[in-house]
Length: 326
Ligand code: G3H
Ligand code: 13P
Ligand code: ZN
Image 1 (cartoon, rainbow, N blue to C red):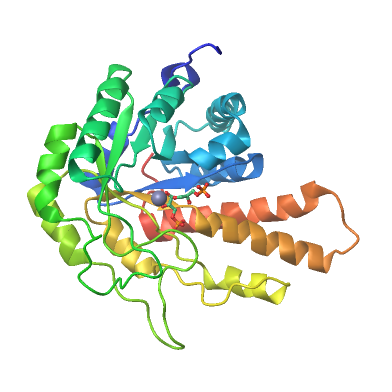
Image 2: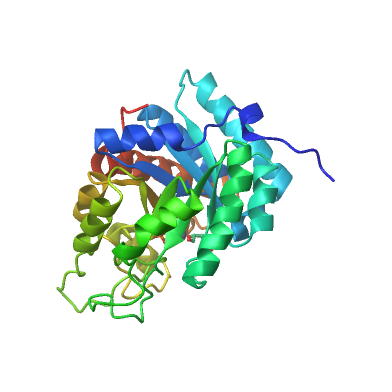
């Protein structure tokens, strides 16, 4: 068995203080997914250059893609890189959508400072029981835990209808007090991926269900809320992808205006994965199409990395309000 390593030894931070400051300050902490070197370099560079606290997050799939040991050293490298750039920004390493106690435990024992246990697909009681079990173990190691209530709507769901998969405000108080979670992911109309809403030509996507968010805030005032599925699906990237041989028809995300409104509320963690994927894919496609003889991955991945830095700085500065808060 590999040696257990806890996040404190890697220079990482848990999310407790980050979230308190974000709620008091009316902004949100960005949570960017990564699987590879260039993504992590871009996240660190952009967050240092904008003095933003940051959560770098890894899904179960990303963890097996990158390798557990490699991830630990990447996280350590991310902290070192930030410090060598003269920055003290807090960096949390978070498990995104953990689906079992064992996975959460393994991540905690390999250096994660925060974990999500996603029991949103289980019955309410089973969700409470699983989340409680993870919280007890995590808190013994001062690791923070995100739970989830309500299932994110899929593209096939009628997100405008009063859908049973939205978080039920009447459940949140009981869930938070019985599980002891540090933050709660909710479902108010976002979904994962690049196809969040079905909209006709010239139509705007439906607004998020801020009425549900407000009802939740009234029941658990000041409690940290997490918004998944928060990519804007930047139209310029979709256009570039389609221009250079891709096919992404009807890709639509959450508008920046909606995200700004959410970030000013008790939403204090905003999850972004798809926009990073789109930026990389758009720039790699563009670079290779414009430089057909090039075969050095540093060239096209370097172009993608530069674009990611630009995208993340924009989000921190213009959307989430986290710039200057570290
Ligand atoms: O919420 C899901 C994230 O976008 C991660 O996706 O499981 O394909 O790594 P993944
Ligand atoms: P997006 O697919 O909108 O980027 O959402 C990512 C996410 O919620 C990761 O947990
Ligand atoms: Zn998610």
